Image (tube, rainbow, N blue to C red; front, side):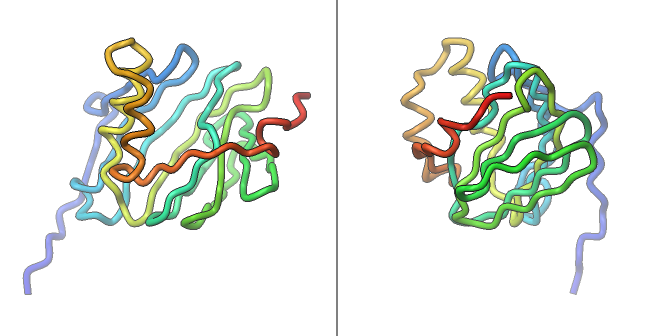
Length: 162
């Protein structure tokens, strides 16, 4: 039996960086096709004022957040948690969640999905919508393809803003 033992090495110079809004950058590190479906990884820099990601859930994959720098608010079910630099939060499939930097702060986060799911085209779609090159309705239409299911969360919508 032959097993591919080659490491995957993505250099900073080779990583694709997208803007999905005026206050958010996403660096694409490894998509499912590059990892044999094991995981998908991106880095998100959410600048002060970034809306982050609205309430959603995934049916097939676990999403993990690791805070590299800054402070992140995360909706996990009906609870809002504050993550600081060095904190890790694991969101299992079907658990509703959302995230954004704490008001007035930034958050630099490493996000992984396990198992991997081809998501880089989803992030590219977000950038096209931001640039006016695609319609926002395309995001909702892609929910099954990218396993990203949006919904309204009164808990997130009514969160207190310090």
